[in-house]
Amino acid sequence: MSITIAIVDDQHLVRTGFRMILEAEDDLEVIAEAADGLAAVEVIERDRPDLALVDVRMPHLDGIEATRRLVAGGSPTRIVILTTFDLDEYVFAALRAGASGFLLKDTPADRLVEAVRTVAAGDALLSPAVTRRVVTAFVEGVATQSVPPPELDELTEREQEVLRLLARGRSNAEIAEALFISETTVKTHVGRVLQKLRLRDRVQAVVFAYEHGIVRAGNG
Image (cartoon, rainbow, N blue to C red; front, side, top):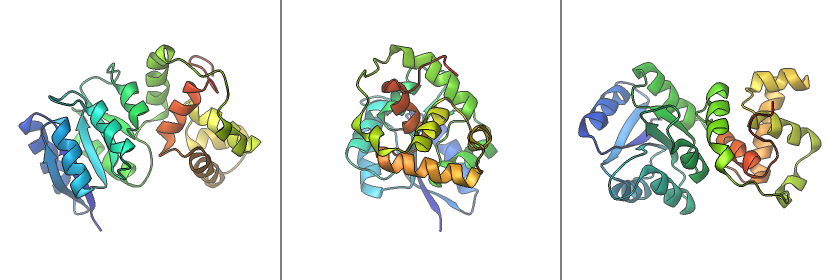
């Protein structure tokens, strides 16, 4: 069964290049394109692709607001933001809006294909190193909430440990090593954390942890 994709970028050559790369793979199918944020929201809500590659800067409606509207509307489509710089000032805002990660526009073809499959499978597209850099760069401007959210009470002590490590950009292997448990057990804990906190993916867990002061930039 193919992974269905929408490509959203105001540059025709970018859309064409991405389409050629993706459709060269047997399991990937581009079913929609859009050249601006408003059109993106319309086609994604209509066609409901598994994943959308969305440029961060577009006319009429930028990628952040388009993402926010789609997530708020309950769209099941996972959003990957396309950007020119790996520390683009809008990246963290996009993650807060509900994006599942971001990609550089000059990402090599094999990495683009791998990224699409990763996100479509339900994993977030941020390596531990990128997580730390993005969060550290932008979270200082986010006001943390002093009162712990009630959802935290639903987490076991071990799940809270997993959340803190996850938020610091640790991989499953690193979390497993730190807690002396298997990677399979880590994946189970991560799944329960996301379910209990009603979060879409690991990236949203990172954002949640920093916004609520569970961890702070520069610590660990």
